[in-house]
Length: 175
Image (tube, rainbow, N blue to C red; front, side, top):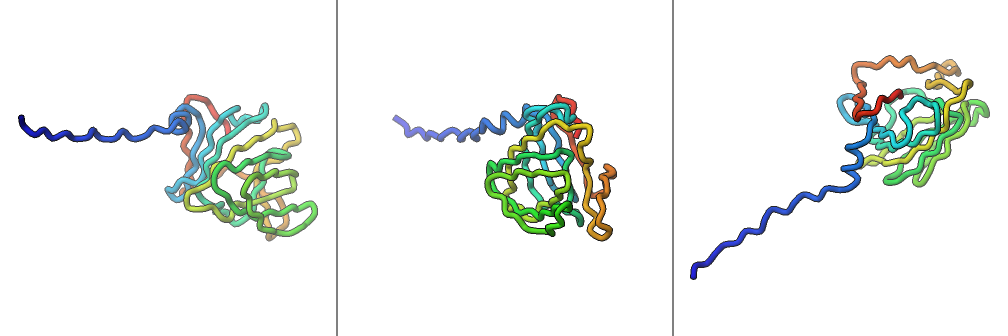
């Protein structure tokens, strides 16, 4: 009888169910200086603002902008699924000034007069589930709070050479 050498077969790489699900979704990924900044998966909706929408966000970098920004909804709810982040917040209607808020569980963002910027994200990033309402006729426009002049500056959609967006999936998306 000869000695046989048995090699254990290579262990298959585990395929996580979440990876398979995410590959089926539509969305967009924003890159800054060639690095992933934010990935948005459309769970419900397409970014058009016609109805309630549900997004899955993976935030990987802090906001790079000088000014704080707003959102085109009167409110939105962000539930932290993994990680945490810190944001700077300003309510221009009450002139409460800039304050740092550490977000571990959820963020209910209300008021068209509120601006914020994510100022700290852990190296592994943050996963959030974001619920937004339909946009109304008097919805606010994306933009920035110009701290020098004390006015809202609309987002022109002008993408600089260091920022680009890649859309993915079969669903046509709008934002």
